[in-house]
Image 1 (tube, rainbow, N blue to C red):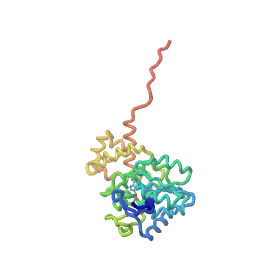
Image 2 (cartoon, protein in one colour):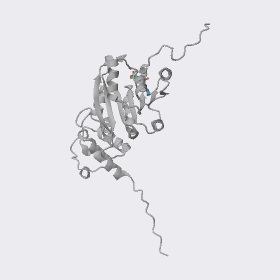
Image 3 (cartoon, rainbow, N blue to C red):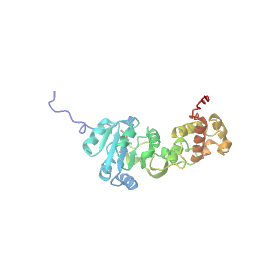
Length: 281
Ligand code: SAM
Protein backbone atom coordinates (compact mmCIF):
# COMPACT_ATOMS: atom_id res chain seq x y z
CA UNK A 1 0.00 0.00 0.00
CA UNK A 2 1.40 3.38 -0.91
CA UNK A 3 1.70 5.98 1.85
CA UNK A 4 1.32 8.93 -0.56
CA UNK A 5 -1.77 11.17 -0.27
CA UNK A 6 -4.24 10.94 -3.15
CA UNK A 7 -3.89 13.75 -5.68
CA UNK A 8 -6.37 16.58 -5.33
CA UNK A 9 -9.00 17.09 -8.02
CA UNK A 10 -6.97 19.89 -9.58
CA UNK A 11 -3.75 17.86 -9.98
CA UNK A 12 -5.49 14.70 -11.21
CA UNK A 13 -5.08 14.25 -14.97
CA UNK A 14 -8.07 15.70 -16.71
CA UNK A 15 -10.45 13.30 -18.44
CA UNK A 16 -12.49 14.78 -21.28
CA UNK A 17 -16.17 13.90 -21.19
CA UNK A 18 -17.56 13.56 -24.68
CA UNK A 19 -21.17 13.53 -23.51
CA UNK A 20 -20.77 17.12 -22.27
CA UNK A 21 -19.77 18.36 -25.73
CA UNK A 22 -16.28 19.29 -24.56
CA UNK A 23 -14.41 20.98 -27.41
CA UNK A 24 -12.11 23.48 -25.78
CA UNK A 25 -11.10 26.71 -27.45
CA UNK A 26 -7.33 26.63 -27.92
CA UNK A 27 -6.70 29.29 -30.56
CA UNK A 28 -5.42 32.52 -28.99
CA UNK A 29 -6.41 34.63 -32.01
CA UNK A 30 -10.04 33.48 -31.67
CA UNK A 31 -10.00 34.32 -27.95
CA UNK A 32 -8.80 37.84 -28.94
CA UNK A 33 -11.62 38.21 -31.47
CA UNK A 34 -14.15 37.11 -28.86
CA UNK A 35 -12.94 39.74 -26.38
CA UNK A 36 -12.79 42.46 -29.00
CA UNK A 37 -16.44 41.70 -29.77
CA UNK A 38 -17.49 41.60 -26.12
CA UNK A 39 -16.23 45.12 -25.24
CA UNK A 40 -16.56 44.44 -21.51
CA UNK A 41 -16.92 47.32 -19.09
CA UNK A 42 -15.57 47.32 -15.54
CA UNK A 43 -18.98 47.14 -13.87
CA UNK A 44 -20.30 44.23 -15.95
CA UNK A 45 -21.48 41.03 -14.33
CA UNK A 46 -20.65 38.18 -16.70
CA UNK A 47 -22.45 34.86 -16.57
CA UNK A 48 -20.44 32.22 -18.41
CA UNK A 49 -22.08 28.97 -19.44
CA UNK A 50 -19.74 25.99 -19.69
CA UNK A 51 -16.37 27.56 -18.78
CA UNK A 52 -14.58 24.21 -19.32
CA UNK A 53 -10.83 24.59 -18.91
CA UNK A 54 -11.15 28.36 -18.60
CA UNK A 55 -10.12 29.55 -22.08
CA UNK A 56 -12.41 32.58 -21.65
CA UNK A 57 -12.84 32.65 -17.86
CA UNK A 58 -9.39 34.07 -17.04
CA UNK A 59 -9.86 37.13 -19.26
CA UNK A 60 -13.43 37.55 -18.06
CA UNK A 61 -12.20 37.68 -14.45
CA UNK A 62 -9.61 40.31 -15.39
CA UNK A 63 -11.97 42.52 -17.35
CA UNK A 64 -15.39 42.32 -15.63
CA UNK A 65 -16.51 43.29 -12.15
CA UNK A 66 -17.94 39.88 -11.40
CA UNK A 67 -18.02 36.49 -13.05
CA UNK A 68 -20.45 33.67 -12.35
CA UNK A 69 -19.79 30.48 -14.29
CA UNK A 70 -21.93 27.36 -14.49
CA UNK A 71 -20.10 24.15 -15.39
CA UNK A 72 -21.71 20.69 -15.39
CA UNK A 73 -18.44 18.78 -15.05
CA UNK A 74 -17.57 18.70 -11.34
CA UNK A 75 -13.88 18.07 -11.85
CA UNK A 76 -13.55 21.08 -14.18
CA UNK A 77 -15.56 23.26 -11.80
CA UNK A 78 -13.24 22.27 -8.95
CA UNK A 79 -10.14 23.22 -10.96
CA UNK A 80 -11.66 26.55 -11.97
CA UNK A 81 -12.42 27.38 -8.33
CA UNK A 82 -8.76 26.99 -7.49
CA UNK A 83 -7.57 28.90 -10.52
CA UNK A 84 -10.03 31.77 -10.25
CA UNK A 85 -10.91 32.30 -6.57
CA UNK A 86 -12.47 35.66 -7.48
CA UNK A 87 -15.12 34.04 -9.67
CA UNK A 88 -18.25 32.27 -8.51
CA UNK A 89 -18.07 28.81 -10.04
CA UNK A 90 -21.24 26.78 -9.82
CA UNK A 91 -21.04 23.05 -10.53
CA UNK A 92 -24.45 22.48 -12.09
CA UNK A 93 -26.40 21.75 -15.23
CA UNK A 94 -27.17 25.09 -16.89
CA UNK A 95 -30.52 23.68 -17.99
CA UNK A 96 -31.56 23.08 -14.40
CA UNK A 97 -30.15 26.19 -12.80
CA UNK A 98 -32.58 28.74 -11.42
CA UNK A 99 -31.41 31.71 -13.47
CA UNK A 100 -33.76 34.17 -11.87
CA UNK A 101 -32.15 33.59 -8.44
CA UNK A 102 -28.71 33.71 -9.95
CA UNK A 103 -29.38 36.96 -11.78
CA UNK A 104 -30.97 38.51 -8.72
CA UNK A 105 -27.57 38.12 -7.01
CA UNK A 106 -26.07 40.42 -9.67
CA UNK A 107 -28.00 43.38 -8.28
CA UNK A 108 -28.17 46.32 -10.65
CA UNK A 109 -25.09 45.38 -12.68
CA UNK A 110 -25.30 45.02 -16.44
CA UNK A 111 -25.59 41.29 -17.12
CA UNK A 112 -23.60 39.90 -20.02
CA UNK A 113 -24.08 36.27 -20.97
CA UNK A 114 -21.13 34.49 -22.58
CA UNK A 115 -20.43 30.93 -23.60
CA UNK A 116 -18.83 28.55 -26.00
CA UNK A 117 -21.92 26.41 -25.74
CA UNK A 118 -21.96 22.63 -25.72
CA UNK A 119 -23.48 21.94 -29.13
CA UNK A 120 -25.72 19.10 -27.97
CA UNK A 121 -27.75 21.38 -25.68
CA UNK A 122 -27.11 24.81 -27.24
CA UNK A 123 -30.62 25.35 -28.63
CA UNK A 124 -32.22 24.39 -25.31
CA UNK A 125 -29.93 26.77 -23.42
CA UNK A 126 -30.74 29.52 -25.93
CA UNK A 127 -34.48 28.95 -25.64
CA UNK A 128 -34.23 29.13 -21.86
CA UNK A 129 -32.40 32.45 -21.98
CA UNK A 130 -34.66 33.97 -24.60
CA UNK A 131 -37.46 33.30 -22.17
CA UNK A 132 -35.73 35.17 -19.34
CA UNK A 133 -34.00 37.79 -21.48
CA UNK A 134 -35.53 40.87 -19.87
CA UNK A 135 -32.84 41.07 -17.17
CA UNK A 136 -29.97 40.45 -19.59
CA UNK A 137 -28.12 43.17 -21.51
CA UNK A 138 -26.70 40.94 -24.22
CA UNK A 139 -25.54 37.42 -25.04
CA UNK A 140 -22.48 36.27 -26.96
CA UNK A 141 -22.31 32.62 -27.88
CA UNK A 142 -20.09 30.31 -29.86
CA UNK A 143 -22.46 27.96 -31.63
CA UNK A 144 -22.67 25.34 -34.27
CA UNK A 145 -22.81 27.34 -37.57
CA UNK A 146 -26.13 25.70 -38.43
CA UNK A 147 -27.70 27.07 -35.22
CA UNK A 148 -26.26 30.53 -35.96
CA UNK A 149 -27.90 30.33 -39.40
CA UNK A 150 -31.26 29.49 -37.79
CA UNK A 151 -30.93 32.41 -35.36
CA UNK A 152 -30.31 34.94 -38.12
CA UNK A 153 -32.56 33.40 -40.82
CA UNK A 154 -35.09 35.55 -42.67
CA UNK A 155 -38.57 34.43 -43.78
CA UNK A 156 -38.73 32.06 -46.72
CA UNK A 157 -35.51 30.13 -46.21
CA UNK A 158 -35.06 26.59 -44.95
CA UNK A 159 -33.28 27.75 -41.80
CA UNK A 160 -36.14 30.06 -40.78
CA UNK A 161 -38.15 28.55 -37.93
CA UNK A 162 -39.21 28.74 -34.30
CA UNK A 163 -35.78 29.64 -32.99
CA UNK A 164 -35.37 32.47 -35.55
CA UNK A 165 -38.68 34.06 -34.56
CA UNK A 166 -38.19 33.69 -30.79
CA UNK A 167 -34.67 35.15 -31.00
CA UNK A 168 -35.53 38.01 -33.36
CA UNK A 169 -38.63 38.94 -31.37
CA UNK A 170 -36.47 39.57 -28.26
CA UNK A 171 -33.08 40.46 -29.71
CA UNK A 172 -31.11 41.98 -32.54
CA UNK A 173 -29.10 38.99 -33.72
CA UNK A 174 -25.73 39.25 -35.48
CA UNK A 175 -23.46 36.51 -36.75
CA UNK A 176 -20.12 38.13 -35.92
CA UNK A 177 -17.58 35.68 -37.35
CA UNK A 178 -17.06 32.05 -38.23
CA UNK A 179 -14.54 29.87 -36.44
CA UNK A 180 -12.79 26.87 -38.01
CA UNK A 181 -12.90 23.49 -36.29
CA UNK A 182 -9.10 23.61 -35.87
CA UNK A 183 -9.52 26.36 -33.23
CA UNK A 184 -10.82 23.75 -30.77
CA UNK A 185 -9.38 20.69 -29.10
CA UNK A 186 -10.51 18.17 -30.08
CA UNK A 187 -11.86 19.74 -33.31
CA UNK A 188 -15.64 19.30 -33.62
CA UNK A 189 -17.11 17.74 -36.76
CA UNK A 190 -19.20 20.87 -37.41
CA UNK A 191 -18.35 24.47 -38.24
CA UNK A 192 -18.80 27.13 -35.57
CA UNK A 193 -19.87 30.75 -35.51
CA UNK A 194 -19.76 33.46 -32.86
CA UNK A 195 -23.02 35.38 -32.46
CA UNK A 196 -24.30 38.39 -30.55
CA UNK A 197 -27.87 38.69 -29.32
CA UNK A 198 -28.54 42.25 -28.24
CA UNK A 199 -31.64 42.21 -26.07
CA UNK A 200 -34.08 44.96 -27.08
CA UNK A 201 -37.67 45.78 -26.18
CA UNK A 202 -40.01 43.87 -28.49
CA UNK A 203 -41.65 46.04 -31.17
CA UNK A 204 -45.01 44.59 -30.07
CA UNK A 205 -45.18 42.87 -26.69
CA UNK A 206 -46.44 39.31 -26.69
CA UNK A 207 -46.86 36.43 -24.26
CA UNK A 208 -43.92 34.12 -24.99
CA UNK A 209 -45.70 30.91 -24.10
CA UNK A 210 -48.48 31.75 -26.56
CA UNK A 211 -45.98 32.73 -29.22
CA UNK A 212 -44.14 29.41 -28.68
CA UNK A 213 -47.41 27.52 -29.14
CA UNK A 214 -48.35 29.42 -32.29
CA UNK A 215 -44.90 28.80 -33.74
CA UNK A 216 -45.10 25.09 -32.99
CA UNK A 217 -48.45 24.83 -34.78
CA UNK A 218 -47.39 26.98 -37.76
CA UNK A 219 -43.97 25.43 -38.36
CA UNK A 220 -45.36 21.90 -38.04
CA UNK A 221 -47.06 22.68 -41.36
CA UNK A 222 -44.59 25.23 -42.67
CA UNK A 223 -45.06 24.38 -46.36
CA UNK A 224 -48.85 24.08 -46.25
CA UNK A 225 -51.13 27.10 -46.70
CA UNK A 226 -51.37 29.39 -43.71
CA UNK A 227 -55.16 28.89 -43.72
CA UNK A 228 -54.65 25.37 -42.37
CA UNK A 229 -52.53 26.46 -39.38
CA UNK A 230 -54.88 29.34 -38.63
CA UNK A 231 -57.81 26.94 -38.67
CA UNK A 232 -56.18 24.76 -36.00
CA UNK A 233 -55.59 27.94 -33.97
CA UNK A 234 -59.19 29.12 -34.52
CA UNK A 235 -57.80 32.38 -35.92
CA UNK A 236 -59.28 34.42 -38.72
CA UNK A 237 -56.87 35.42 -41.52
CA UNK A 238 -59.11 38.34 -42.50
CA UNK A 239 -59.11 39.83 -39.01
CA UNK A 240 -55.33 39.50 -39.02
CA UNK A 241 -55.07 40.99 -42.52
CA UNK A 242 -52.94 38.03 -43.61
CA UNK A 243 -53.13 36.19 -46.92
CA UNK A 244 -54.33 32.66 -46.06
CA UNK A 245 -52.67 31.33 -49.23
CA UNK A 246 -49.09 32.05 -48.10
CA UNK A 247 -47.02 29.46 -46.27
CA UNK A 248 -46.24 29.87 -42.57
CA UNK A 249 -42.51 29.91 -43.37
CA UNK A 250 -43.05 33.15 -45.34
CA UNK A 251 -44.46 35.11 -42.38
CA UNK A 252 -42.42 37.81 -40.66
CA UNK A 253 -41.69 37.92 -36.91
CA UNK A 254 -44.33 40.67 -36.62
CA UNK A 255 -46.93 38.45 -38.34
CA UNK A 256 -46.36 35.64 -35.84
CA UNK A 257 -46.61 38.10 -32.94
CA UNK A 258 -49.92 39.38 -34.36
CA UNK A 259 -51.26 35.81 -34.63
CA UNK A 260 -50.15 35.03 -31.07
CA UNK A 261 -51.83 38.15 -29.67
CA UNK A 262 -55.00 37.44 -31.65
CA UNK A 263 -55.00 33.80 -30.50
CA UNK A 264 -54.49 34.81 -26.88
CA UNK A 265 -57.26 37.38 -26.95
CA UNK A 266 -59.63 34.88 -28.52
CA UNK A 267 -58.79 32.05 -26.13
CA UNK A 268 -58.45 33.84 -22.77
CA UNK A 269 -61.78 33.42 -21.01
CA UNK A 270 -63.24 36.67 -19.80
CA UNK A 271 -62.19 37.15 -16.19
CA UNK A 272 -64.76 39.78 -15.45
CA UNK A 273 -67.30 38.20 -13.11
CA UNK A 274 -70.93 38.95 -13.75
CA UNK A 275 -72.30 39.96 -10.39
CA UNK A 276 -75.99 39.07 -10.06
CA UNK A 277 -78.06 42.16 -9.58
CA UNK A 278 -79.50 42.51 -6.10
CA UNK A 279 -83.22 42.61 -6.02
CA UNK A 280 -84.40 46.10 -5.14
CA UNK A 281 -85.75 45.88 -1.61
N1 SAM B 1 -15.71 27.53 -22.53
C1 SAM B 1 -14.78 26.46 -22.75
C2 SAM B 1 -13.91 26.78 -23.92
O1 SAM B 1 -14.29 27.70 -24.68
O2 SAM B 1 -12.88 26.14 -24.11
C3 SAM B 1 -15.47 25.11 -22.92
C4 SAM B 1 -16.45 25.00 -24.05
S1 SAM B 1 -17.04 23.37 -24.35
C5 SAM B 1 -17.64 23.53 -25.99
C6 SAM B 1 -18.59 23.31 -23.46
C7 SAM B 1 -18.48 23.30 -21.95
O3 SAM B 1 -19.81 23.28 -21.40
C8 SAM B 1 -17.78 22.08 -21.36
O4 SAM B 1 -16.90 22.49 -20.38
C9 SAM B 1 -18.90 21.21 -20.79
O5 SAM B 1 -18.48 20.43 -19.69
C10 SAM B 1 -19.89 22.29 -20.37
N2 SAM B 1 -21.30 21.82 -20.36
C11 SAM B 1 -21.89 20.88 -21.13
N3 SAM B 1 -23.19 20.76 -20.86
C12 SAM B 1 -23.45 21.65 -19.87
C13 SAM B 1 -24.62 22.00 -19.14
N4 SAM B 1 -25.81 21.41 -19.39
N5 SAM B 1 -24.51 22.94 -18.18
C14 SAM B 1 -23.32 23.56 -17.92
N6 SAM B 1 -22.18 23.27 -18.57
C15 SAM B 1 -22.24 22.34 -19.55
